[in-house]
Image 1 (cartoon, rainbow, N blue to C red):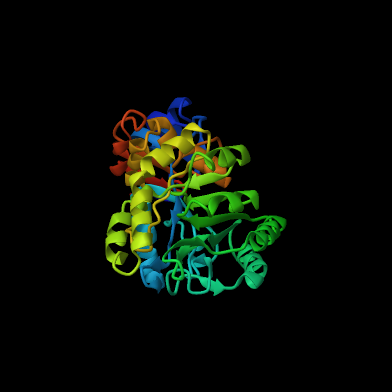
Image 2: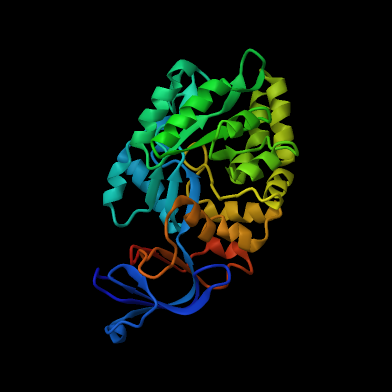
Length: 363
């Protein structure tokens, strides 16, 4: 398909959960609902169209051991693209992936810079490992390097207690979040444990990754402050295996991880029911494969989210949260076409019929 070609999508265009249109045109790589003069020569595609899917927690340029080279990063991005993920919030990567921005055939990436962790309190080779007195400076650095986000590691196993423990004093986090906001960046944090959450929310954090430690006490606080969560349920599914591997050395931590896993669906459902914004993210790029966004949406429905809410978590709502357009007039034509209505069965997301990126059919 040439850059100047006109694309005509016929069927059902899901501009929003209840805004359904019969056709859409792509002219000059952008969406229009006005029939163009070149309509007779348009390439026709039929099916149910959604805005390009969003993976709101994904790591391009990272694997289980740390940063990867450009060819590996490219393969990761292509795998996500072919699964329908056309917008990625990269929630921490030690690799420089700015070159992706120059590739019209790769998903758009919103970067959070590199993880910021406490010394020896995170996965080796992933993060800047620092002490609290340096937190503000490093947050400022990553806010300038990123695309409007900064990623903290809020808790990790504390070897002195043998269990999950918060990484940062509240005062240090308050100052760091204030500095990020001054620079126009939002802040998110990796958090598994219960006691980590309230101090971060009270400090002004914008989002929590995983959020397995949410309770009846903290869920109302999240809802009141509008703090979003990205549950990464396909990642939380690995907790029992991790617990089994670490039980011999850290039995308290292992039991805690199993409890968090056991109540994962109840936690997400309670958060959603309370009005906490929930978005879809896979945590791909560490130990998990890329291209799992459809699986994550299914997991959200298993947790009790209605199908349309789960779809919004990876389409309309996620794009609005990240400040990126959907299938609106004049927007870049990033869309995925399916055989049937994904509002009726979200499992259809696993089988894209066509992937259109920047107006080009790429899959």
